[in-house]
Amino acid sequence: MTPTAGEGILSRTATVVYWFLVVEALVLLTTAPALAAVVFLAGGRGNAPLIGLCFVPVAPALSAAVFAWRVFLTERDLSPAEHFRRGYRLNWRDVLHWWVPTLAVLTLIGFTLANLDLAGVPAGYGVVLLLVGAAVLLWAALALVLSSTLSLRTRDLVRLAAFYLGARPAVTFGVLSLLVAAAGIVVLTSDWVLVLLASPAALLLLRTTEPVLRDAAERFTA
Image (cartoon, rainbow, N blue to C red):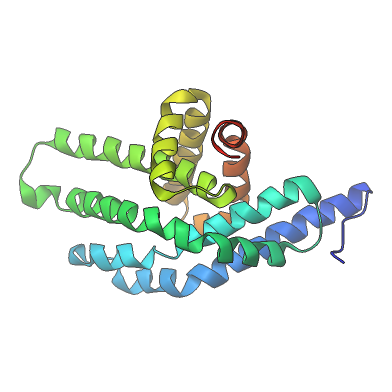
C-alpha cells in the first residue's frame, strides 16, 4: 500500500518539502554525470557539439519530474521516487525522439552566436538567432509537458506543441516568463543554481501549462 500524507498543516508542509527534495535529488542523480562534463568542456568555442551531447539526459529527467509532480497534484502520497522512476521508464524514449533534434538546433544556434565575431555578420543576425532560440525553447517546454503526461505520437506532439504556442497565448507568456526568470538566475548567480531549482521549476512549468494539458486531454486523447 502506498503511504499517503496526513491532513494537518505540518504534515502537508512536510510532504511538499519531502517531494521537492526527493525529486530534486533524482533529477541530479540522472543528469549530474553529463552536466559535470560541461565543466571540463566549457570555455572552448569548438566544444559546442560535445556540450550539446551533455544535455541529452536533461529532458528525460525533467519529464520524469513533471510526471511525478502531476501525480502529486492529484494524490499527494509519499512515494515521489516511485512516480519519478515510472515517469522516466514510460517517457524517456518518446522524449528523446523530439529532444535530440531540438538540442541539435539549439546547439547550432549557440555555436553560431558564440562565433558571430569570427563570421563577420551584422549584429542584427545575432538578434534573429536569439529570437529563434527563444521560440525553440518555448516549443520545447510545451513539448516536454505534453510528452510527460500524455501518450502521443512524435509527429502529433510536434504539431500540438506548435499549435498551442499560438492557441494559448497566456500559457505561452507564462512559459516565457519562466524562461526569462531562469536566464536571470543564470546571469545573476550561476547555472548550477538553476540546476538545484530543477524540481520547483518542473512544478511551476506544470502548473503554468495546466490549461494546455486539460485542453489537449479533452480534444486529442481518447
